Amino acid sequence: MRTDYCGRLSVDDIGRTVTVCGWVSKRREHGEFLAFVDLRDRTGIIQCVVDHAHDIRSEYVLAVTGTIRERPPETINHELPTGAIEIGEATVEILSEAEPTPFQLSGRVEVDETIRIRHRYLDLRTDRMQRNLRSRALINAAIRRAMDAQEFVEVETPMLIASTPEGARDFVVPSRLNPGNFYALPQSPQLFKQLCMVGGIDRYYQIARCMRDEDLRADRQFEFTQLDMEMSFVDGQEVRAVVSQAVAEAAELITGHKPSAIPEMSWLEAMNRYGSDKPDIRFDLELVDLTEIFSETDFNAFKAPCIKGIRVEGGGETGRNKLDQLTDKAKTWGAKGLVWIKVGESGEVSSPVAKFMSDAEIAGLIDKLGAGNGDICYLVADEWRRAVHVLGLLRLELGRPPVNEGGFHFLWVIDFPLFEDIDDAGNPVPAHHPFTMPHLEDLELLAASGEDPSVLLDVRSQAYDLVLNGWELGSGSVRIHSRDIQQQIFDLLGIGEEESQRKFGFLMDAFRYGAPPHAGFAFGIDRLVALLVGEENIREVIAFPKSQSGTDPLTEAPTPIDSAQLDELGLRLLPPAN
Image 1 (cartoon, helix red, strand yellow):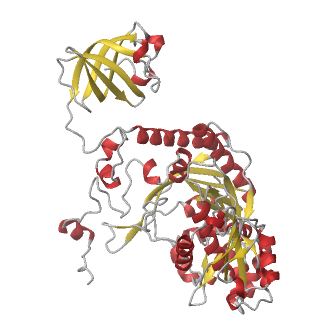
Image 2 (cartoon, one colour; image 1 turned 90 degrees about the vertical axis):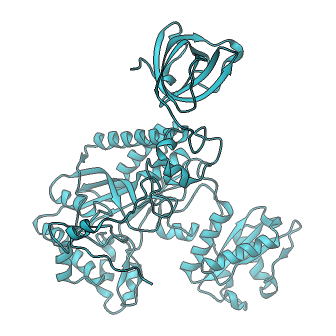
Image 3 (cartoon, one colour; image 1 turned 90 degrees about the horizontal axis):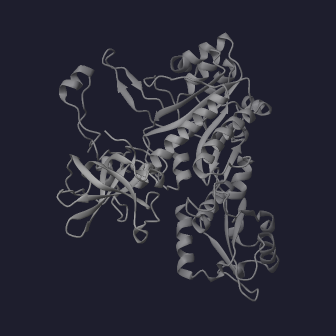
């Protein structure tokens, strides 16, 4: 039907007769007999000079045949790659008419997101969505090339699986053939990729679709896509090298620049310096420990296990209203309060709590924070975890740049704790999934936990996260490949041998037959694409996303199903809760 794409025509085609197909982006009248029509397809826009006899409106679908010619110098559009040429002597075939669209597709007017998703088939025509989805396709292709080059085998794992504890709620699917029983949609292919290692695949990967029934955010959807991989006879360092290579190739394809070697930082260092396990290292404002300075303080508010502070250069002009707002925010984050100290242009110190501090304490904190004239310092005194958490959030509030500023700063965070808390029943809460291998030198702490469960919080895991500009791209770990160690972890989590056999028998049984040491990783492709193209929300790089509320304005899902389907599945609906 067409000989060429609109955006691929150039001055080299002058004099050639072509046929292009696409949508009318814009129509402009030119005198009494002619009109200019900008025709758009997936590659770009070309101007066509057409007869006024045609009743052509915005978003009509046309086939235009004519001769490529130069545009007069005064009419050249330097903003378009095809701006120096046009299709003249054009004949037009209207392939499809279009009603007025519910919003402009030019992108010049901000449109409510719900309206955009409801009419996503129109939104997909915009330059923004075309760019984002094509960038996503290029990134997927780059990832596959990188994995294939490193001798990985692409294996597809099941979408209907048994429900397993992965840290979020499963989406469940009733079984028609086995009434009263349910499948779960996979939160990840975790167990199956471990079985691939037992099966001798050695290097597995998959661009996998995963589902988690959790609250939605800018970086989270019910359905998401991840690069999933696993390797045998390797350690975490080797896995990180493979992932770094795949990510670097994807980033270079979109940005034109290949990232340098990705630095590594321990979880403990990240928390102490940035107050986050996914630190944004594009800007400073690092946390500084001030506990020792106030070890003998008379200030009751600072008689705390941990005191942390940050310095904002030139922040001394911050007004009282803003300071009160920051204090209120700190309290919503869990702090008892927020202390601020200004250093004046002449070196004088002002703070509501200065009178409670000794001169030595004030001088010590100013020196430790490196505060100069015109700066402001913020301090939080509390338990260590809360102090670093609150200051980490404050750091982002005060200094985080937009997602598309400051370049792309990747970081590996390693050596996470194996457990993040102890629940009311005395069982530890895993920081990652329960198949993560502890550091070998910390295994003795597992045995000692019978007398003191709190020692479990000191157990380090061989887990690692990839972070980009403050977003967690993905997680991985060295896996447990010993049946005995895996059962030991299950026992600590309150999963006895009978229950573990019922839920994970296929994995535990596989470990009986020679499981190799293995490790893996998975990162979110939605998040990586969003960051590389400069989007704050992953919905902008997904063709058909759910809205913030979890509904689909396009198809109106989720919707009720009729009673016949419920009967076939052996289900009954409970009345709504009051």
